[in-house]
Image (cartoon, rainbow, N blue to C red):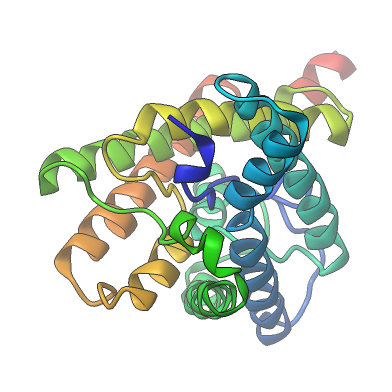
Length: 260
């Protein structure tokens, strides 16, 4: 299985996962649209980038996964910094939902109802742009996540995978190393593992905005499959992950332990 066969639109924002700046919601939504556009565009180049680097280095097989992981790490690290600069902009709606369920950040139901459509619109723009600009020899690596099993099995798989990525990313951010470098690297490793695990089920996406962007390009955005598999169950998975982590290790518990 070649990493170029999959589209990586998965990772959560890292250091800016819990926005702290009181920005206008419209300004933040514009930032969400912009960073999601850039994320979908950039992440869509991972397959081509891996193929080009592997070809030049003369490597194949498992070694290509190391190349993909390294490229993904650079994206996660860069976009985490970019999200901070943009005041907490995010490219994954389930990240905001998980933060809300965890009881951190400034989001509420109204702000999320504005930010989610903006992220979806940004993803559409990113998918359309990369489809237009990607060289013809690499266009077969594009296309986004797609259902490879029956509807209910796919919905369960996407929900479980989003639960796992949400739980692990939250855990890494809250309890992991202080270094943004190592946090990004750990998130990238978790992502690659889950992408491989879910490749035979849903793609996977674990990011509703990313899934919508590619579904729009492929004219599947208004289907029950898109809503059920790539929106409903991922949100359920991310919220459950936040609730469980909140029970096990509430935000700020580490600080309280240190003070005691």
